[in-house]
Image 1 (cartoon, helix red, strand yellow):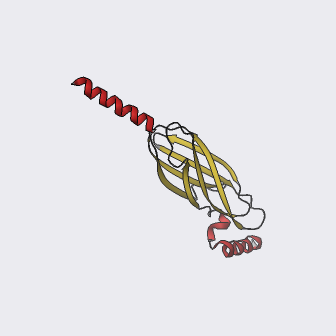
Image 2 (tube, one colour):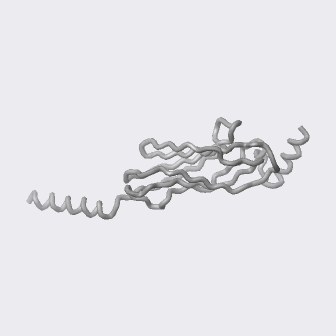
Image 3 (cartoon, one colour):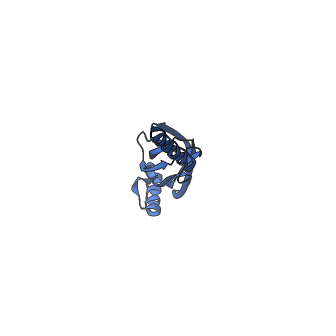
Length: 151
């Protein structure tokens, strides 16, 4: 008990967050697609970054889910409870693959395993997969030809 209290005081002093020792301090500072304006032929990678404040909290696993125009990346940190409390920067990338042209919502959530069943943080944003200029040109030419042939 005394050891955990001392670690809690050190963690609060280092991070300013009381939830650190409980594994509740894994904020997400940003998430974005790479490339930043993908086309339907680009392989899209989602990258998220933030900080973890706990005793040795490496990224254990991640789960990527794509449903229609929603992309969700769950990042699971494994809290070992060994070592000194510290705030460490983290970054994680996961390849999505190619996506059709559309607007997408992106949600990134962090979890602290093995204790947390609910996310410790949630970050939401959106991005758009833009049609390729050549396809737009072909669609435009096809539209012009269709209009011209009707006359």
